[in-house]
Length: 308
Image 1 (cartoon, rainbow, N blue to C red):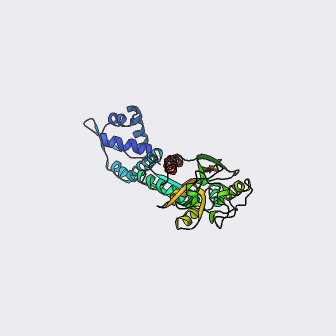
Image 2: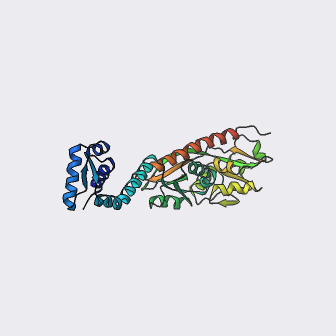
Image 3: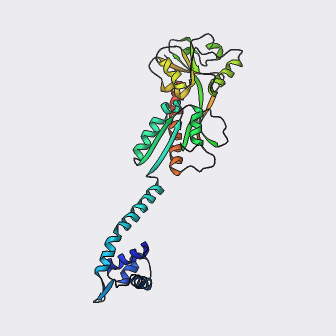
């Protein structure tokens, strides 16, 4: 019977005891306040105020009505606060998907920093193979995915975050450590760990070997490059991987050497083509990009230091 605006006017008149005070509080004209009160009384069929010494004293019925309506005002205020929090980006959720390399090398730091800065943001992380990572974005299960060397999909578009160089990870005592650039010929007949040919990065390595008249045949194949780097960290062979995976697995006694020819992989954020990302998602992508830029700068500076 009564709407929230009418109840708000009634509450203001009860609070200020005059239609003038209520009008100033609500930014309305005094006649509008008076007309609304008369309309409410007509609809309800009983008076809401008595005039006492030029002030309006609420009747018992008016006070009961306001008491019953107070939860509505609390709910309205809560909704408005939630809207303000959403507008300011203080609450919300971000569903992130990633391949294992990025989940290990970059995302833990990004998520930890983001959670500290925005403690009311719910963050979820799915780590999957490339095809599955792209699919969860297409299906709306994830808001954004961070991937390396992705391929075109009609429902997705990619924002380039950075390019990653291919590198060779090896022991400092290995003859490869003394080379400025490691080539496919340097790796022939070596115990090597690398991405399997069944994935795009493995195919890119295979093409670079083939261009030099060699076959790409890792002794140990892995789906994810961070796994290849970890095997070398444990003391076996050399690995062809991206630079982030290599430096995530670094320990004393290991070195990284550039791989030649210059082979690079796009690190991208995958997003639905037909849906504008939320401001929360856009802010997370920026935080991710900033962290990647910093990390790559650290990685490349470290790789240029002379080995003793």
